[in-house]
Length: 321
Image (cartoon, rainbow, N blue to C red; front, top):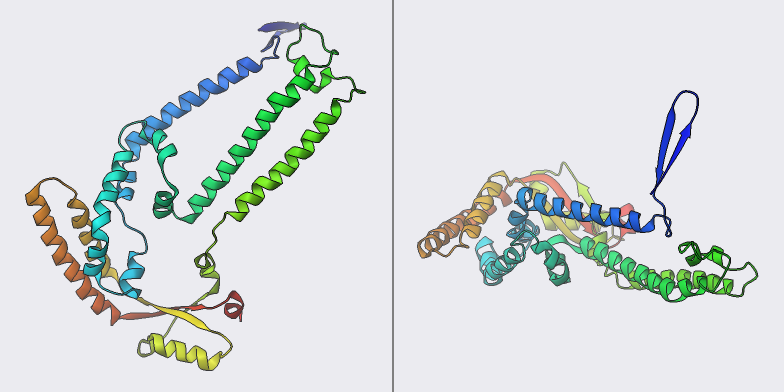
């Protein structure tokens, strides 16, 4: 480390500069690594202490349960039976993967895309896929620079032997040297490589029709209660807009009481994940009773539409009309 003293008539200024044969790069790298480790440790400790809600998220079912409850086939009881076999095992596996202070580090490498898709949706898969492609792209560039560019720069003799870092840069090559074409070629190679990697990323994007569902869905309000019927609304669109094809009509209902009952049913369902037999029997009976109440309240809610309908058309052009 070099310290320079700069003085004038009133005061002295001291400036410290990280320097050396490699222009302070090892020092800068060491500081970055130490800072990264400290932040990683802080994140790990805070995550364990403050992220208990993450465990609650692990035992939550898909957000589509309301859609399945109102617009799907079957009832809450049948939906529970269809998902009961794999739900408990799935939750236990997820909680086991999240057990321990540093368990999330292992989960990064063993977590499958199917589980990420189930818990976080397609956007998380696309984001992680983009990050993977970027890491691969930068890794290839790093390998080429270390195996091709760095040895080429060492072939020059314009920089003194004492400056080890200077000998690794382009300034060590003679301006008339043919080795400069290697730098030009690698620049074009990196450009083509980036285009190829991003094209591969775009080609693997699995965009489904559901992602454009919002763009082709109309919200109709103030619908009279006597007209809150799927067949009536479809007939209206067929008569008024014969060129538009209606795929589905979803009606909105008053579900305030149903929300409370379903939350209680979900609580009893999750509470069954215990090893005491008596507790299992108790919560199984409570879940059955609440599921029956949910089915009964669902029938009541279907008789109380709030005058709001979501009409999904076949294309976005039809919705814009």
